[in-house]
Length: 88
Image (cartoon, rainbow, N blue to C red; front, side, top):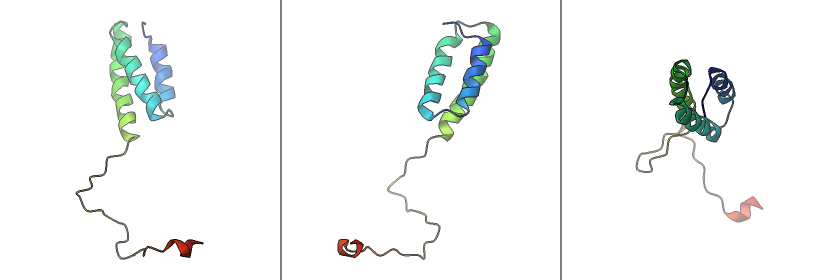
């Protein structure tokens, strides 16, 4: 499929509010179609890929490393575990 600049612009507009799986789909779509496009569309696709990869990266959280100590906003506050009967 040959990608046009107009199609890339539509992807760019939609990706700004799209979910992470949809952004991942757009990334694959732009990557797969960039080689068969016109030089203008290929250049636009290359810059759009940078933007899409950034959007995908900021929508994901970093994995927690259990070996590192946890940082809390208020470490002086302690929550004591309550027995199940106290919840009833």
